[in-house]
Structures are given as C-alpha cells and as structure tokens.
Image 1 (cartoon, rainbow, N blue to C red):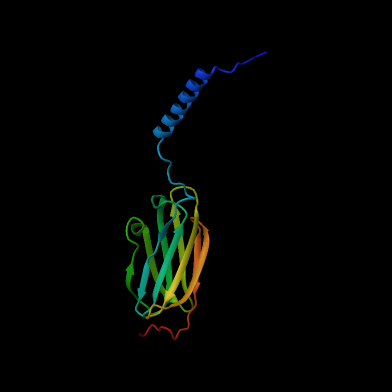
Image 2 (image 1 turned 135 degrees about the horizontal axis):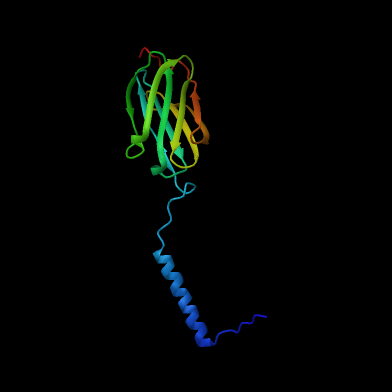
Amino acid sequence: MFQTTAPSGRRRRTLLGAGLLTAGLLAAASPAPAAHAALARCGSDPIVYLSNGIKVDLTATLSTDRSDVKRIAYQLHVPAGAQVTKVVYTAGEIGRKEVVTVVNDATGPYVADSVAETYAAPVPVNITMSVLDQSGSTKGKDTASGQTPQTLVTQVTMDPSIASADD
C-alpha cells in the first residue's frame, strides 16, 4: 500500500512557489500561438469597370490568414460588347494573389465563377458579386458560400435598359 503525507506548512509554500514560478517561466518562454483559421479572416475585393458604365465589385472573404491564401481567381462573364476599362485590385499581399479574367459572352445575367485556393486544409469562403450602375447604385447582388477550392458561382440579372453595351 502506498501512502502519502502532506508536506509541512513551510515546505508546502516552497513547493507552491516553485510550481508557480515554473508555470510562469514556461508561459513566458512559449511562443505566441499562430493565427488559427477559425479566428482569422481575410478578404479580396477587385473592382471591374466596364465600357457600358457598369462597375462589378467581386468580394471573397476567407476564414484564414492572408499568408495562407495561394490564389483567388475570378472569371467574370459580362454582356457581349462590354469592354473592360479598368480593374482595381485589392491593395497589398492579397491583391498580388488575385486574378480576374473577363469574358464578354453573356446574353443574360452577369456571372462570376470564383475559386479561392489556400496552402493548408480547405477553409470556409464567401463570394459576393455586386453590380452597380453609372451613379454607383447597387442594381443587384449575389452571394455564394462554400469551401476552398470549390468553384462558387454568383450571378446578377439586370434590366438591360440600365446599361447597354453601346454607351
């Protein structure tokens, strides 16, 4: 049979002090924990300006740190005849990972096929496409949610009289 006896008052305080000191030293020596995917968020927000006066704002929000993002690719289908006049990419590290391809073949809605890729395991991603008219008013918005590296599709149908390719 194994039996223990409680240490005396002075010995107990010494052991308690040593234990607290050891715990404090271990906590101070441990590196700060790395950002966890569930706690960090980053976003991509390129804006495509078209010759018909329409502005398409593509937004990706990923539940990961921006250093984990490998690439965010958008393929935007716009009305035949509409040309890209300008693309404004997100500033900084994420902007260098964005790829926007515009195909002017749509006969109906504006459609964006979007794929976000990460280096680590799949993470949740939300893609939003907003279509704005010449005055900056939102004429349509769509959101798709999934996991990287799924292709997420958003589409916005607009009244053709809002902007025509002949403007």
